[in-house]
Length: 151
Image (cartoon, rainbow, N blue to C red):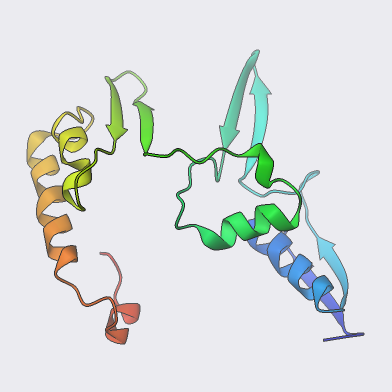
């Protein structure tokens, strides 16, 4: 791509990643974003004295491309990966809950958290367990799965 002119429309995570990749490959890149800042939905803002984070603020170790992107832009040291997933959940006007992984093999590693996860009705929590067990039976090497949606 050396010497090519590349135009990227949109300065969200995907647009920034595409622009950086093209530039790394030797292209002359122009990135266009209509908002006054880059990041798309991934941003922080303050309203009425309260700071809010929006976007890619929760990710897992398996998000290797996102981690590689953070390394490339020099921000990898600004994020923290938990040794074991532990996420507090606050539903507006509802109960506080916590999704915490325990040291069991998947999908049992989330079972205790799921059983206590109050934002979901018990019947919905049981549906999640049934779905996790069904997913475990899938052959991840089967390329036909790439054509199926979660729905």
